[in-house]
Image: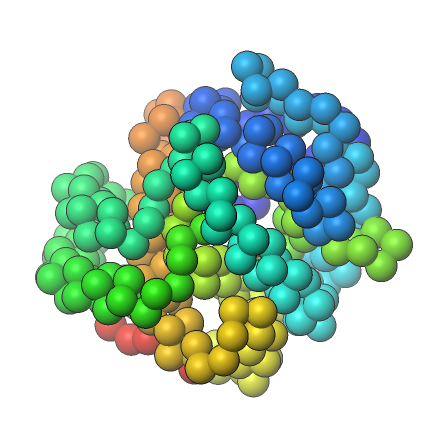
Length: 276
């Protein structure tokens, strides 16, 4: 999770053996998205739900190989937002076929579950997460009241999962997706623009990308985005914890070289808001 991209033009299954069945919803989800959004997701030649396999057409070059420029995301994010808006009509179907449920109302309980785990954090950091539980519930209720519908949320939307070919941008690798607040998608996008593209946290590009993404959703949503970003950073950690549950000991050791990064970004959002 976090850096595993689909290999276009070949059969694909789960990247990590231990989480393969956790991502078994991916072939059907990808095929359904391609059927409705053929211009913005990987082209599916065939898929097998029982064996969790996909056969994808070569989608071109991952934008990470092009330097992960913010200009590319400026073009990609409005199209992705339009897909999310359209998929809100199919939420119940996605849930019925195994896409994880991270809708806002489920999140406070998931934080309770997270802090009961043996996390790769210092004891003081876990205590900070515990202390945030009440406030997190308030933030979730406030976000839910804003009225933005739950929909598909890629949750791994970064430089290795956005491809360019012949001027067309396509999103690949939907195995980490959930049904959640749509705006949380940019938690991962923004993280890797900081880490890979080296944009400072308050670079003007983040506001520009936020506004481009929000344009299909309507006006006056900047404050809702900031709230969703804060809540979504915690939700992203919950998704990682779910993956971690299904790993072998050897796989978990490797996984835990990255999991603390996700947890500490969540912890930071417990103290301050996201990009503004």
